[in-house]
Amino acid sequence: MRSEQIEFLIKNVNSTMAMEDMPLTQEDKNRISDCLKGKSSFNQAVNELVRKYQRLYA
Image (cartoon, one colour):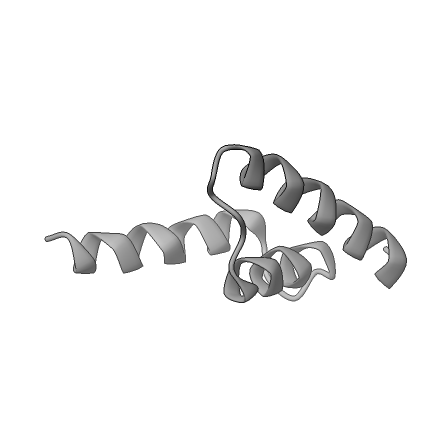
């Protein structure tokens, strides 16, 4: 996927999330970009987020 396509997708997701007053952080944008570039899988990213928030709220 080209970088222009990735940026377009991230901007669209960010716009949608911002409408709900939950804009993406730079970390979120990087995570999405890494998944779209194949550096990590979406399942791996979700699992890492689940572990992160389990530690924070346990």
